[in-house]
Amino acid sequence: MRYPDCNAALSALSAGLDTPSCHDFRAVREVAMCDAWHGASGPITPSSFAERIKESWAKVHAACATHGGTTPETGFLEPQPVLPEPSEIKEIRRDGTTEGLLVMTPDGEVTACVTDTREATRSCRTVPGGESALTAMRSLLEAQGYEVV
Image 1 (tube, rainbow, N blue to C red):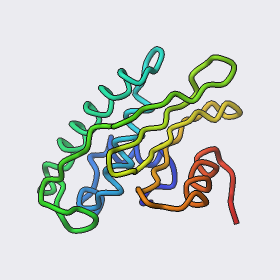
Image 2 (cartoon, helix red, strand yellow):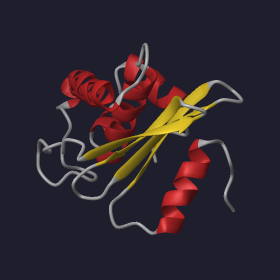
Image 3 (cartoon, rainbow, N blue to C red):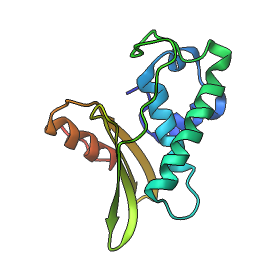
Image 4 (tube, one colour):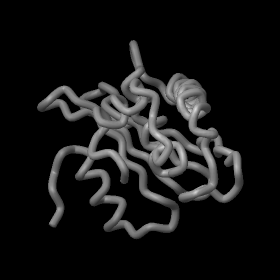
């Protein structure tokens, strides 16, 4: 993970992203997911979040255009990766209120975006497909601000 939290990722996006970020798929994916989650106005639904993901990727590609685009230096398999459409989006609710989303891609990668109600902050974490349940749970807990040691 390149950024410690969504605030850092969003700051980097607003500053235009740097070359190392644009050439690191995990970094640009993190920025896109954070932007999609934080850019939400009004209720978040699976279909509105899917649309926000597309819009966020467009912002990332525009920010990286001055750095040669997103290139295959770290984590990319081809010069312009084919970004998978979410195969499944699930709402995370508490007392009937949507507080997050789980987004799974066809390759099994899962991103959890959740709201920390104690601090009114939002955070996203991604677990690559094929990772262990322990890694997935650790990522989700860290997104909520817990330290897993």
